[in-house]
Image (cartoon, helix red, strand yellow):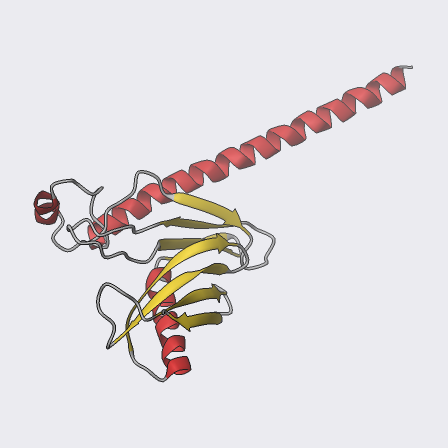
Length: 201
């Protein structure tokens, strides 16, 4: 009888300790994401890639952030997933650029930052926005034989790879309207992209 009680006690203790470990790990990752998000906000503001949140007074916002077109959102989203297949979760921070804060209606690509495991440390890639735009333009130019002057994209899913939608402007396209659009898949570690596009009617 005592052995059964002792066995039950040990099982409960192991279960409780396991739950504590899971909770501590979740708390650790949430705090890590929070710290990295705050650092990224500062980096974006200092570099001029974004300004503060958009203001209804466009001129006032332009004076305060003369090098920026887009503003920081209220919330930066994140997703944790093992993207490089090493058994450890990697972190993607991201947010939509939305419409320009300068008074125009021009939209920009989503902002992204990858924090990924490499052995016992975490490395970062803050250039994904520019990299994906360039790759979309490059593949579009190869497929059409036409020179593209601009491309923007929006993320629809983040897993082993990034999937999303995009628009491409060629020389003859008016600023309001992209000539081509479609979907893409991009692998962050093989650097391979698949582009499915069509001409906008």
